[in-house]
Image 1 (cartoon, helix red, strand yellow):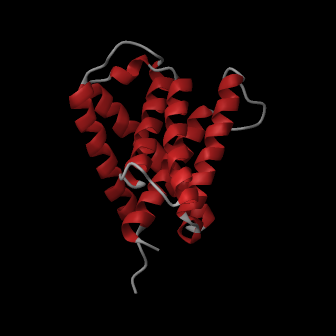
Image 2 (tube, rainbow, N blue to C red; image 1 turned 180 degrees about the horizontal axis):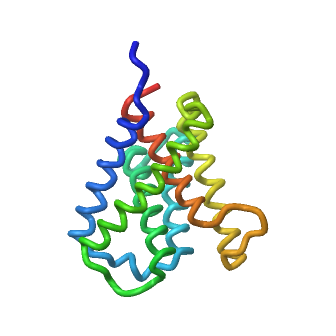
Amino acid sequence: MEKPNTGQQFAAVKEVCRDIFVKKLKDYGTSWRIMRPKSITDQIYIKANRIRTIEQTGTALVDEGFEPEFIGIVNYGIIGLIQLELGVGEDIDVEEATALYDKLIKQTTDLMLAKNHDYGEAWRLMRVSSYTDIILQKILRTKQIEDNEGKTIISEGIDANYMDMINYSIFALIKLKYGE
């Protein structure tokens, strides 16, 4: 059996996330530019918490599945990175927002590839529920850093936590799409 290609699977899932991001840009514009990073972190929390609640209860009253929530975490993570880079401000055009998305998802992918090399694809042996827990942990870390006005003593910053949330969400989407 051929070994799964993480780069190809990652690219396929990223393309789905990007496609949804661009379509929502066309529907809503960049209305999210008004959001402060703390609010974006809370949006990601809502999505991750919904996933965990359904995992724990086995019941979803809104029949959407996990995929839209993980895609939402990816896209809100990129929005968070854009807001960290640009600051809260006025709307930007679709082309600029898309170019920023592409730049930041590439940086996030580069981080994943480096970590994936060092960790030997350990993510493939993890459960989707573990990704959910790790994402929630990263959210709590991010909230603490935000409460500390972005200052850390030894830890990575908000941007690194957003990137990790994005990457774990993409891993979850790969597992959900391609299986073990």
